[in-house]
Amino acid sequence: MQATTKPANGIVPALTSIRFLAALTVVLSHYRELDLLNVPASFFAFVDGGRSAVSLFFVLSGFILTYTYRQELATGSAQNYYVARLARIYPNVLFALSIALLATTWLLITHNDALFLKWFALKSSIYLSLAASLVCQVLLIGAWFPFAAIQSPWNGPALSVSCEAFFYILFPFILRCLLRVRGSTLAVAIAGSWLAEGLMIALFLYALPPSRSYFLAEAFPPCRIAEFILGIGAALAFQVWQTRGAATHAKGIVLVSASVGVLVMLALWQPLTNLFYLQGPFFASLILGLALLERPVLGLLNQRWLVRLGEASYALFLIHVPLAYLAWLMGFRASNGWMPLAVTLIFSVVMFRNFEEPMRRHIRARFSNPARGLERVPPEALPVEPTATAGPGVQTN
Image 1 (tube, one colour):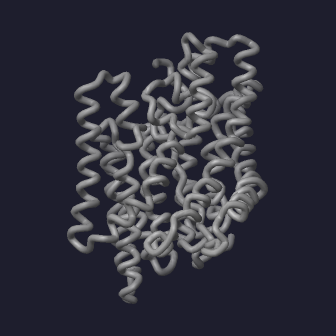
Image 2: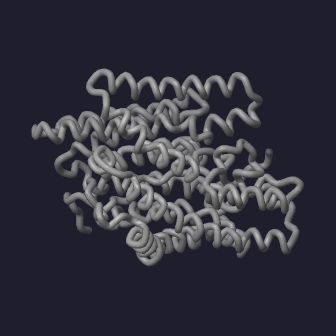
Image 3: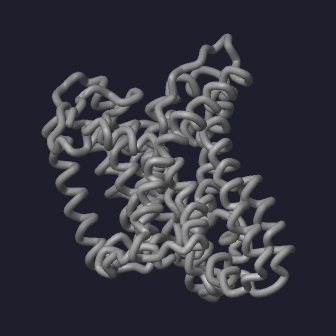
């Protein structure tokens, strides 16, 4: 197998590869919840059912956007940036919804109340809830409503895309604010945002009943934006080290090793229910460390096939639950669930190459400002479903 040390779309291949590995933990977790795979309980617990991986994606998203757009947004209009973000996320959202429509229509035709409850957390007012949920998913606002009947139907993993959409809207303003400060002041501002997020989560958990507080703590966009800001801070630190021209490989090894050690410890220990909060800073240091590496340490993350799967991870993230629903309805279970899993992995790559990329190029060519040029934008990190209440297995509202 061939490995590459060259940047993938402007960023080291390892950062693209870890997107797939994180997304895969979510896919395997949801397949287990849908009785499509016999995933060991120990693995499910270690990855927190895929929930904690969302921090990696939110942090990585902030890192990649800063790496890509810092110069353009610091000196000019944000028009091309917003067009590129729309082209990045929206076609796949609609495509995945079209797949989800098939399973949802079948449940409506067959009046399968048991699966409506198990998959979509719908007990009553099914048509009204489906309509409201569909509007929220199309408008990318589902995460703002802490109700399972809004967040779970259709395509639950799309919930965290609404968090990303919120981050995308604010990113130019956040970046410009952070660029106005330097050194220790910048570090204090980023650390302060993370501490404020923790206080907000603690307040929700203390003041509200669990049926609402956990929805807010795990999915409410203002409760997640600090992780995105941590990624911005990691990218700014990376660019500072780049400009110095000194060797950074040793720093990268130290950061990666220390981050992996702490993340494994947290996954085993799980001191907080909302484990993602503690992981955020260590995901930031892991990403920074991988970016600082000047040559591969472990060849796996630089394998071309893994980088390709990482590029297709957004498609995988959005289509895996709708396709899993269809597979379940077709009779697949744990004994043969590996077959729809393999089809989903292959289809995500096909979708990336033949739908996602062409649609992105078309939208950007149509709506971007040609006077500013069309910079090549690397595929950034996409969210993994941040909470079990956004996916299969939800039974309470």
